[in-house]
Length: 179
Image 1 (tube, one colour):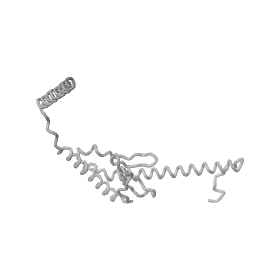
Image 2 (cartoon, helix red, strand yellow; image 1 turned 30 degrees about the vertical axis):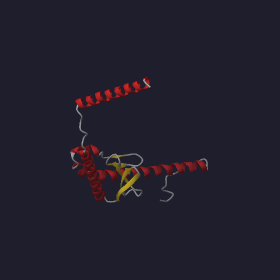
Image 3 (cartoon, one colour; image 1 turned 90 degrees about the vertical axis):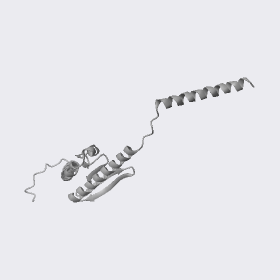
Image 4 (cartoon, rainbow, N blue to C red; image 1 turned 180 degrees about the vertical axis):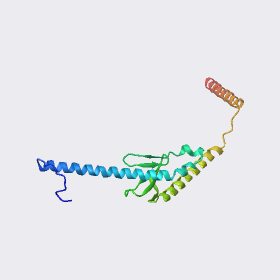
């Protein structure tokens, strides 16, 4: 573009005003780029979300409350799988990163630029979580309950304890009163 085709810029009164004007234009352009990048991240996460729909359709009804899948916006868009695991875009905005929060901090489970590879990683994660939950439920269901005591046995133990306590009190009074 030559100077004849450029739109005429108003001449600023001072060099500082011109520099402020230029800085504001640059900031607006950077903001537009950042918004475009965020929109691209959201679009890529939506593509992955659609790709894993079949995985979550196969989750049995007893496990559906365990997963809470959805894309959240914000400063860093995320595809949530459950309360502790999500997918974010890497710094290059092309790499999917499957992250989980642990007691020792955030851990990367998988990284890939490929949607099918991430779908497989998410499928493995969902399967592992379902097995872990089944095992946790099985251990709580098979744990033996303490045998219940009948009311008569509880009442008999109370009466026996009360008589023993009264006898001990009577003996203590008897021996202290008669030296």
